Image (cartoon, rainbow, N blue to C red; front, side, top):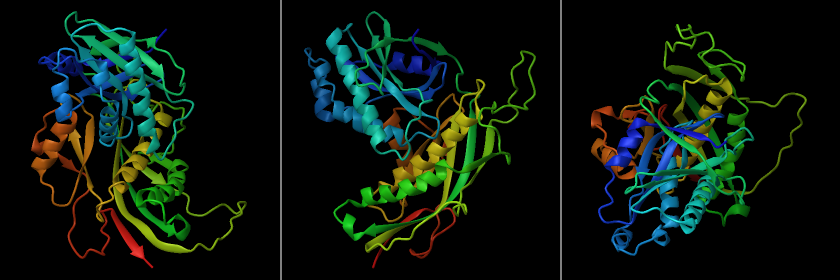
Length: 396
């Protein structure tokens, strides 16, 4: 039996509002969360076309060969930067005027694998054996209204398509749980003379990998308590008349404790390294993760928080042109308790953030709904403020 995808009702409405306007097809991404039993889709967003591609798709003989794999992959990477912990790009959708053949399925398969490979390349964490490795390709025929849902196992390069169920549910994510934490970081990354040919981004990532191990091995307190990873996150909540846990609070406070020193039974050695410079990352990072409320496990919640910490630091360190890294802004999804995120550079206005969100995710938001998680501070450039994360290059 294939996987089941439960999609927010607003996703159905979004598909209905897409007008092909003479194009052969419209493609886009599906965003949501995986679980062991089923996957949840809370957002669909179409790929913004290139100008020249927009003209090509209006040609009556346009076909799937006009689907720009590289462009969609770049877009998927950009969207993944806007997802808090617990959310992933689950796959792709495509709406066509006609039902398509096997060549069409092959094109979608290549796209799913290319996207996943590209997004994995920049992550500081690896998928575990417990992670769901199937990604979805959803095809909707606008003329017949038929839906074809198939999945591919991205861990298996030889994976073939498997049928999957696609269903809609109203208010799917209105009761999802959020986990919030502030992580204080102070990372020193030496730039070795032997790695002088590497890009700044690659050198920084190599240094962040060592820090990422601390985050992975940290102790996570949820509302001040260490909980067994296999316990239900909602354990201790009052039961409703139906026997389900009543969620008295949709938000959990998380604190991260990292190991500072090695245990006495560990041996360590010191090395002398010739360096041409260093990168310092210091500040407080606001992190947030979301998890479904259908009997969530502690281990899944902690994993979502870990990955948000790693993702948001790594994503901002890829901004090579800026000494002051951008600040995190959370943006609500209409009809959901889940918020996505964007990044605000020093002189950007709220209107610009709103417009960027519309451009990237094809959804309108109100300026008053923007939530700046990391306050912008002013002062001497060298100063490091509590709610600010900066990138400083110190050349010896």
